[in-house]
Image 1 (tube, helix red, strand yellow):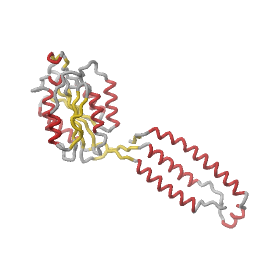
Image 2 (cartoon, one colour):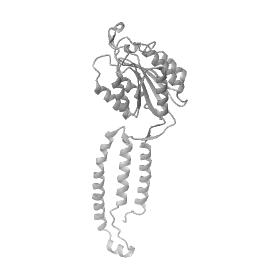
Image 3 (cartoon, one colour):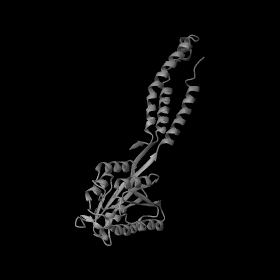
Image 4 (tube, rainbow, N blue to C red):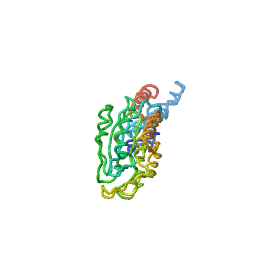
Length: 317
């Protein structure tokens, strides 16, 4: 799959017909002038070849050079599946008020933090891990880093936000942005109850966020922290905020990004989920920037064209 970071430059491809038109127009004009001063019939009898040529090879080279230059300006990136040595991760932890529910002890947030730190111990040394928290807004606790002590400290510093709701799409977009510069596989681990606490869950915004993650080649694993049998209804200590567990939202996000949804009920379930993530991340999407290769191709063809013009297709006076 190829995408273009600057697709507006592709409009310059419409100059190709102009190049072809100008080639034959100028060729015809030059031949007309040459016929005034040379007897081509006599020259053909001497040389045994037709000295008037349309220079199709030169035209083809120029078209390819022009295409290569335009495509390089458009910054094409090739994405392909390949075995990768490791992934870089962003751990996104929901710290909205609904995560204070105690269907996990001591509560949803604390079990998420503890198990996230266990996951950090499992990632290979070549992996970088970033940390963000999200409620009504998303906060970057730590950009992707290879220092496991710093990563755990960032996770431990996350605390419940008593107000502001839950912005899952914002967390997906922020997490994807943290991973755009990595040359390894990219994955977000989203730990949340899936509950929207600021009103009706807007599916369009989640769809846009997952589409953005797909464009950045980010895989999203969702871990549902809660249970259908857990505290439903409201948390009176936080102004009657809902603590309903929403599995459907998390399944939609994972399925849309080639990730996996994990429903957990015990600490053992968390451990199995993290082990499955690491096992699944043996193959990822690798990106290769093509701009420099296209520029190199254009330069090589430019020198070839120059050589042909000065040798094989050199004009006779």
